[in-house]
Figure 1 (cartoon, chains in turn green, yellow):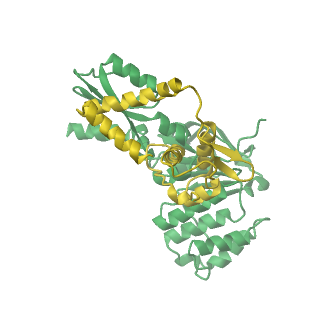
Figure 2 (tube, rainbow over the protein chains, first blue to last red; figure 1 turned 180 degrees about the vertical axis):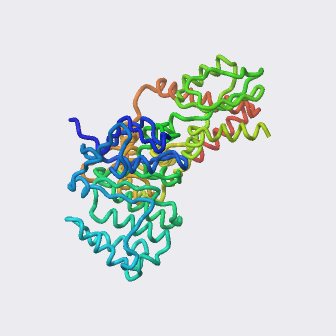
Figure 3 (tube, each protein chain N blue to C red; figure 1 turned 90 degrees about the horizontal axis):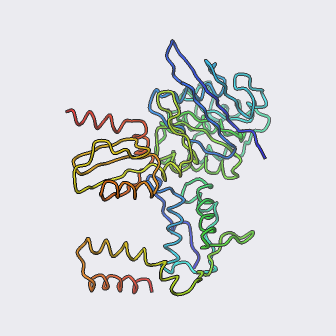
Length: 305
Length: 130
């Protein structure tokens, strides 16, 4: 059976003042996926989210949520999604309690019980005024307010940036509960890879306005590997290894990061170069640095010093 | 003795996918005799909550274990450890073990161990896993 994807972005381009912030991005997110959107500062994460929600008009290409065009979302579609932006603003003179009631009044199905439970679990004082909350506390409140109507799709733009480790763990736990039935979908942007590793089923990596990688977290970790090569003789500068992301040759030793590891590749290299090849696992942060080209830039800078 | 999620430890920031870490740990518990046939694995829900990882990750690990015949799904109860399946002729089973042994011997030679020294290590391992 074909189901409509929860999110579908096709060939999205967004230009600000002649500069392409997003350049032909495609992204399809199905129900139940927990998607982490990674990217360096300025790679276009927030712009992508805003185009997707119809908060920014796309220069070209299309974005749709629940099969509806993002620029023209119906009230019904909006009631099925929750969004936490980076710039969170709730009337500062309201108390936490009043703010939850105020926001809750906009929704037909507001889960008071869930909201009270989360407020307690996340140590928010319901009598405090929103205006005096710390950045971290305000972020927690924003997430709770976005979850209060139990949306089918939750979109979070850097939700944990200001949270301390304990609060982040509680936040992750809530997201895990949220997705337990595998019907709820989450898209969240972050640059904290360790959070993403725990809960994301899929990863998208934005690089200079393009989707540098998109796929399952597990496949990413299974495929991107670092090969450590030791030969008896000097190795050639280019080794023509399929899927090479980065190659660093130093005499008879070489370090090669590849994007499509399989045992055949390793066997081929070791026979072709008469070398010993060991395969090293990379965690998400290392993969992110490799794929975004930061590792090689760093290395070049180091070498020229 | 029942197995609890606390007996598992996942390292999200390792290069090994979390579901594989869980698969490997269950296998290790079985091989080490800490898990016996008929015992139940913790529910997906318990594991996800305790380890703070996505439910799908646990489900994936359990499905892999089911596919490889380590556990079976019992309706309404969860995942139960299966009797370790001993199939095939003795010769066949020995030949399955051979490549693993070859790897160990290669490493042992690299370390400069002689036959007696290698057998001593094997003996210790065999005793530990009795």
